[in-house]
Length: 338
Ligand SMILES: [Zn+2]
Image 1 (cartoon, rainbow, N blue to C red):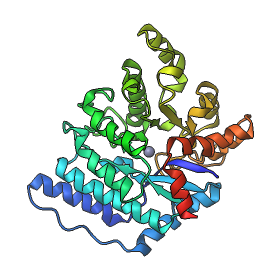
Image 2 (image 1 turned 120 degrees about the vertical axis):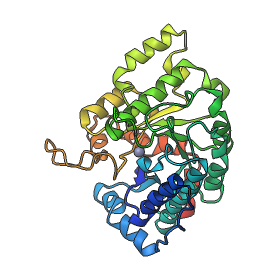
Image 3 (image 1 turned 45 degrees about the horizontal axis):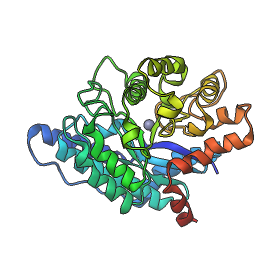
Image 4 (image 1 turned 90 degrees about the vertical axis):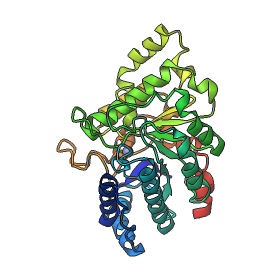
């Protein structure tokens, strides 16, 4: 089975994000937002059949762990109340996709984060998504300010309430920023990679996983700059008198394969233990074009794993085994779908 652990609903019916704009405009004008627009099952079905599901079939993947559009989370927009309503709306829409295509999609939620507001206010929505909607994980934004990094590092006790809930529910979190509203940082080209790299360095500096030995994070986009600079991070940890990274972090931190060329995947799989690598493509997402050097889509990441000279059993770990370990609730969902 080939499981893509990182996909977003980037093709949602237009009225979904159209309403979000109205909601934020109403917040700015201090008026009430209009009611949420309706969406039929047929409208939703069409966006998936001609989008993510079509690519699953073409590329030979079976299941996508599916979450709301990352740039659309917009935790820097509106206030905590707006974030709560928007998160519910986005997560409910993911559930509708998963209910329509239970063989092909399993849900991961966004959280109603807001800069300067304790993540304790996200625990209720996480619990609702896991217990009522059947989701198996969450996306945690390390920078709800959208590129200005106004909140404490992920190792600060500020974040502990959401970690306690993640541990209680046994769900991992993907560290995933949203849009950049800082003109210095291009969203998917800089802010995303910065977010990934920054989160990993934050984890090095503290002892978060002593407090939460079973807490699990996926750092997407191949771990940002981390695998390429693995020696730097090992050396920094050593200078800080931290244990070797494999003992310090690698029981808790995983990397996905959203690296859009073969040499990058070769480096990732040479540097990072194979037990810590999870297959993902993030389609349809950041880079949608075709690589003229190969004639294939950049984000058709399965081809890169297929091309690796590693044993089939190792590929199976990346495609399936590791993902089932990091998302323990996935097994029950798959049994249910069957
Ligand atoms: Zn993503």
